[in-house]
Image 1 (cartoon, rainbow, N blue to C red):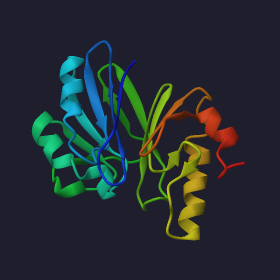
Image 2: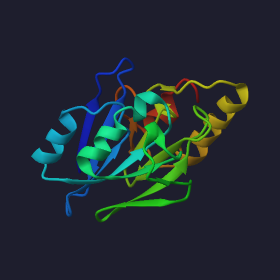
Image 3: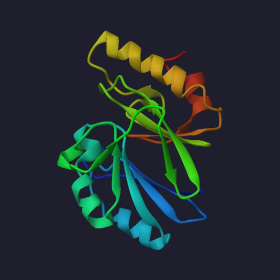
Length: 188
């Protein structure tokens, strides 16, 4: 597995991830809260072609670096919303869509609640959850209805994954579905 985890130097220390197909070296960048020089360095060092940038939700700390990343990599943007951070050429993804990265295929699932539209990207054994699910927590919500929606989406669309599925969240350390299902205080 080729996976780069980058804690960005922005005020909220958001994460960015690069995941690549080991056979084709094609890669996806998940969230881009800042255009950190470590991103192109990792792509060069691993001899990757970064062809896609996937945005989990519209908050600035996940999209602020998007215009520079698009310019640098020439990658297409797949997002839950049109025009994240002013980027106009976007494929607006829906829950149930798939995303191919080389010979790997990910499912796009609904994890709305933290924001009105939120998506997670699920590869076999690995999921990128944005601010829906963290290690030991969940993303904040504005209303009781959005809180209930987020918990329901996590239960239906993430906690149905195998226990050993790695959770790569928008902030903080990675975890696994099994750990979060059993110990996350929002679900026990």
